[in-house]
Image 1 (spheres, one colour):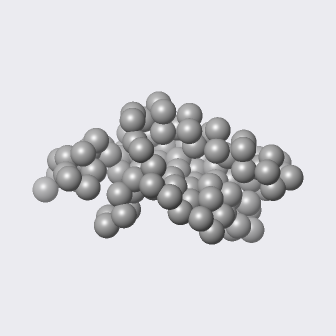
Image 2: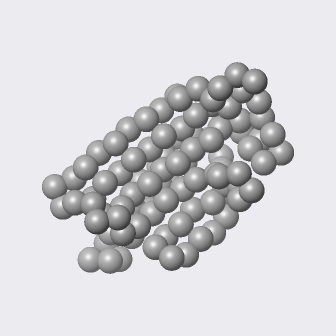
Length: 98
């Protein structure tokens, strides 16, 4: 089977210690679990490792997102919306946490 192809990768560390990492891979085949044919991990945390927001679709869980200790289903639309939702949620969570 052909390997997944990395189609987007970005890592940014901000002066306040926030780290944002995004990686999206195109899979060689679509599946019931990943009908969009993508695997992704978008992660935002403080440099000490405390989670702010994470979106991912690990095997067995499908598309979902984490806020601190909360997890919920995420309705994937397209890559642009995924990234926009992630960035919006980072801003919302950072404001909420002060």
